[in-house]
Image (cartoon, rainbow, N blue to C red; front, side):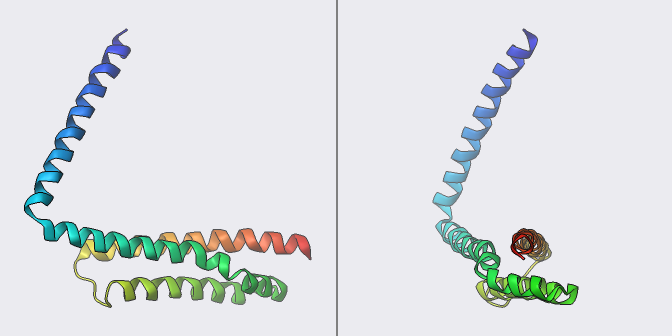
Length: 134
């Protein structure tokens, strides 16, 4: 019974906090429309970059097949390095080749790390399927 009351009250408090935060955000962007435009341009760049990161290793599947046939760790490392380099260069291009602030660099580095892990996982998945065909 105490758990049910806690969930009910917690749900109401959380709802009130979300409504107040949404109202405060709406008021803030009403007073500062230029910041809303900045957020949309940043989100557009992030979504375009994420699209490239998600599609690139799948689009380069034929390169993964050639690397598997070579059976070389150096070739696999170069493939992963190339994919991550393309991701990094495209992100820097979208950022206008200039990044300011430590937080921005930390977020970018976290994104690059996630892209590298994603590229590794996709290439490993593709390599396992190419090995099954050999």
